[in-house]
Amino acid sequence: LSALVGIMVRVYLLDLGSTDPDPGMYTLAMHKLTTIDLGFQGFSQVIAAFVAPTGDGRFVLFESGPASSVGAVEKAVDELGFAVGDLAAIFATHVHLDHSGGAGVLARRTGCEVYAHPAGVAHLIDPGAKLLPSAERLYGDMLEPLWGRTEGVPSRQLKTAGHGSTVVLGDLEIVAWHTPGHAVHHIAWQIGGDVVTGDVGGIRFPGSDHVVPPLPPPDIDVEAWRESLDLVRGLSPARLLLTHYGDFDDPVRHLDELEDRILRWTSIAEAVVAAGGSRDELAASLVDLEEQEIATEELPEDVVERYRRLCPMAENSTGLYRYVVKRQS
Figure (cartoon, rainbow, N blue to C red):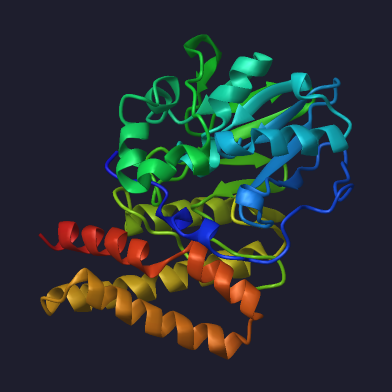
C-alpha cells in the first residue's frame, strides 16, 4: 500500500465556505440512510457518513470517517436520537483514512462490529504495519493533525464481507458488492434501493451534476472500475450515496457520466504515454479539459474549488499514468 487518499491532500488549506453542519439538520426515516456531515477540518460537505436504524433501538454506520472526525459522528448520531453506544456495526467501503480511519476508535469505544473487504482487514487490525507508514510518507507531521490518532480494530470485532454476502442486523439487510477500480479492497454496500458507493461512485457535490473519478495510486484499474460500474447499474439503485459528498437520485445519468469521464481521461493518458510524455504533461492536459468542462457547466466558484481540491490532477495523473504504463508494458 504505497500511497493513499490523494484526494484529500490540500482540502484543509482552503476556505471552502461554511464551517459547521446546520444544527438539527438531520432527520431520520426508518430504514432509509441519512447523510451526516463530518465537518472535516472545520469544513462542510467534504466527508460524509451514513446512518441507518436497525429497528431494534440500534443503528449502523456506513463509513466511519477519519479518527479526527469521531466527535462529529457522536454529535450527529445524538441529533438523530441515538447514543454512540447504540452503534451496532460499521460498514467500511475501503481502508483509506478518510473512509475508515475512525473505525478502530469507534469499535473500541462501543464494542461494535466492523465489516470490510477481505483484502483490507489486515490494515484495519494493524494500521501501524503498512497503512500509517504509507500515510506518513505522504502527510509527514500533518498526519495526526489531519486524520487523528488511528487505532486498530480488535480482531474479534472485525468481520470480512464476501462478494454478494448479506449481513442481517435487526430489520436491516445489507449486501456487500466487491467493486474494485479505485482500490482493490473496495466494497459498495446495498440497502434496499440505496447503494453506498465509496469512491467507486466518484466525487460530486450537492447542486452539481458534475461527476469526477478520484484516481490516486496505487490501485487504479480502469477495466475493473468499469465492471464495478456495470455491477452497480445492475442493482437498479434509487439513490447513490457518495462519501464525497451526499446522496443523489439520478444513478443512471450519474454512472454514465462517471464512466465517460474515466474513459476520456484514460484515452488522454494513453496518448501521453505513447508519445513518451510525463505525468506532469498528463496533469496539464487533464487540468485543461476539466477547466473547460467546468466553465461550460457554469458551476458556482465555491463548488469548483471543492472539485479542484478534493480531486487534484496531480494525484489523478499519478494514478492514471501508473495504470496506463503498467498495462502498455
